[in-house]
Image (cartoon, rainbow, N blue to C red; front, side, top):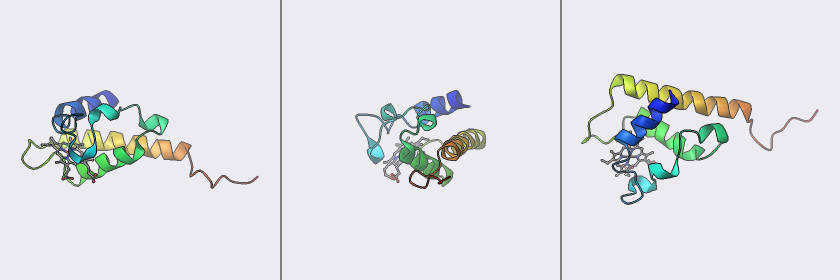
Length: 97
Ligand code: HEC
């Protein structure tokens, strides 16, 4: 699932989101699918989740993701973000025992 997501992002997002063009002020070079498990770049991954689920990305002039590709990417993203936040409850709200 993670490998599939990485491949999809490289294949379909990298043409605009790279270090040279830097559309939307981000590059696929700065993120890695292993980030989420380490709590890295969570804001970026959340914005990816949002833009793909809204159908904003890839842009309308580009070939859209198939339903299957989109579902797989969103499923993996949601699962990863959820499991990270479950195992890392809000800092600063640690329960006193
Ligand atoms: C044809 C070029 C192009 C491709 C391909 C593309 N994007 Fe974008 N993307 C843009 C541009 C331009 C912007 C900035 C303007 C905007 O937000 O519409 C952007 C903005 C974004 C943002 C930032 C939105 C925000 O609110 O900060 C995200 C996240 C994003 N793209 C994700 C993706 C993902 C994921 C893919 C691949 C599935 C993708 N993009 C493919 C051109 C592209």
